Image 1 (cartoon, rainbow, N blue to C red):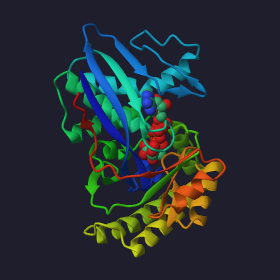
Image 2: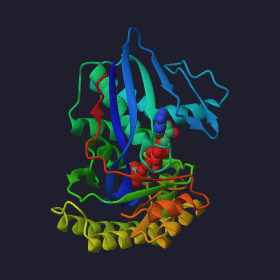
Image 3: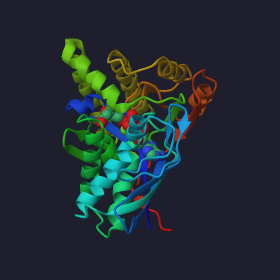
Length: 338
Ligand SMILES: Nc1ncnc2c1ncn2[C@@H]1O[C@H](COP(=O)(O)OP(=O)(O)OP(=O)(O)O)[C@@H](O)[C@H]1O
Ligand SMILES: C[C@@](O)(CCO)CC(=O)[O-]
Ligand SMILES: [Mg+2]
């Protein structure tokens, strides 16, 4: 039995635009998905994923080829929900050159689903790592990140960046621009997350931005503007790389860029009333800046605040279900010793 756990992430800047080749800077956070993989004698895949909830259902299922869950939920919904686990198993089979390998897989996660904290990437990264190790064919981190990206790319119908999967694999803060992925030095930033209890579908939201970008010049320009602000943010981070703690000036400047980034994402149609409400509650509470994180549509915002004010204000904000401080996860995917 092999157990691996991989972190979720917040985006300091650059989600959505990163799908079109602009740079982005996500940072891994200490909320993890844990995947257990146990090879089977046959070629079946049995999946236990108790956190999986579909529009108000919670399902527990035993999956596998041609052996779908015994629950009263329309099959397409279940297929959609299971897509990332299935894709991870396929990547592991291919990597280990074991097309008929069967597994008992268990997924447990403290990353809310579809909420912008990269639950899909964490499940895919931990899943491929656990399954390849269980077959005695561990991958190096670059290959693991690459295969995890291929899995997200397939499930998201060819529209995905390498950002979430690379960040979850490596941990820390990373910079992704097209195929170019590198860890970067960043000071320990005081992230506060607000979660509205809801979710957005990454594939759909990404497709929506793609259509807008085709149809309207302003949307294409907005994507490029996000790229410009990310480059500015990166320079600030690079200048502060040697500092253990971020200076007040750095926090103020990064926060301002986060505010700009939220406005540009809203222009692309991926914010939501609850996300805007949480962003404004954070700003009113004195956060240096606040923005939605991830695909949007519902889910989480991330703010910068070293004091407790933002977390407290969010916990009293209508529409915010949970507020918490998110610590940087300096370590990416790792094996959990039984
Ligand atoms: N604990 C889990 N068990 C099984 N599948 C999960 C789990 N967590 C996430 N997933 C898969 O990931 C999907 C959510 O991925 P999606 O990309 O839409 O959101 P996200 O990754 O949480 O947010 P974002 O991509 O915006 O950061 C779920 O529908 C499910 O298929
Ligand atoms: C919206 C997006 O940019 C981030 C989702 O966390 C999609 C992607 O990069 O694949
Ligand atoms: Mg995702």
